[in-house]
Length: 304
Length: 304
Image (cartoon, rainbow over the protein chains, first blue to last red):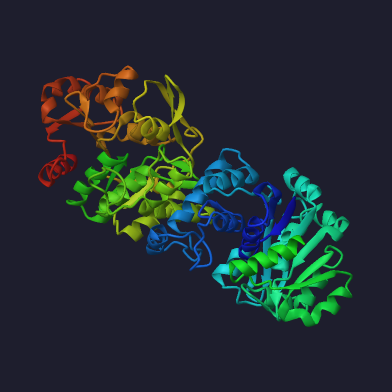
């Protein structure tokens, strides 16, 4: 069994690639909940939903987020009412959030609802939120304190960040399912998600970092930084603002002590020895899942 | 100034008729909140919304509730997910509830949000929820305890009711705006709404019944029962189940001591003396607002 520490889009693509090689029962995603929010009273779990939508084939390829065949009536009307409409919730997507919020009000956990939604969407791997507790990624920025989605969506991750914190993490409990999966897995994979804001909130949940440290020789990470840049999102900018090297080496250093094998892109082959010097094995391959063949190559490297 | 104790559809029509005669600033609706609910995490105020939608001309005439030009994408998707979709929330209607819920989360009161939504919808009279506190109409029925909307919508008001209670009412505080309006009005009107489940929850808020009792000679009620039947909804059935006469006389008795003038339909002219014997003036007119002329006649009677 393989467990994959997962953020949103990058993780979803890696999971899809791994699912091409592994049986469903062999694959578990341990998913970040630091982006989760309550907006308009609705409980929204962006990373869980991105993975569900991608693995079910219902993801919107043009937008890069949300569901295909989406419509926008509710948001349009909400905008007309003068409501907050900066966080785009499609009509189809809203149904997911209404479902989840209703189930929460009935006492269901995030883990239970993730499982129910997977069943509805036909996702056959296990998606496990790392915790059922509330963990919120918070940005201290040049314009003040921002929630994850305020930073990411409202301000298009375009403001300078001074520091990042994880409200609720210290008091959070990892789910028993997560602990069992990480303990039973022959390999733990860190997806090519943003280390600072997608993977770190998972590691901040007490117990998770310790498992990785103990099992580091079984931990494989895929660099989300290729040739000094992120494929998507603000990982490069944030690494720089928070004093890390903006390179696969910077990410490897960030994961030092937690990771036994680090996978970098062919474009970064020149950094192989620097990373080996950190005490990691290095695999050089294509890490840009631009087409099914490349995704398959990356999956093979992860499982090698 | 005139204040109208208001439920949903019947009150909305009377208010529309009165607005045809009065200036906007002369007309205030004091609105029932006992039907309000939280569903899927969204705060829904059916009577306030029915009145806003009707007075703005945005109401859906075919359905008899909700907004015109409505679409149903979210509910359709929610149904596909296996979510609870018995309470029909149109895409356009949902925007209202998202707006309200967001504003509540920011600390706005029900009164403030009602005012904001009126401004957005172009409703120029004042809509005042009787209280900003939670009051919930609860039905004890043959199949167990039901919330208002479970009784009304989910079970199509088709189960036998043993008793009705108003959770939260005793501890609720009427809004200062409501008290000021009822005190300053030259006339207080009780709309032809269901006495047991639309008007009673207003009267249950401490202080309201006392104002009506004190000012009963200035209080005018319109019978919602015509020729022994309700135009709409379960008023007739509930009057019977709870031991009242199913007639305008039964309603007049229900309001005895609170009402100085009772307006009954021409079809009920034969009951005039029975109601006078209760110590009320009686006006006999057309009370079915089937067309603008009839609505105008009723408005004239209310204001006479």
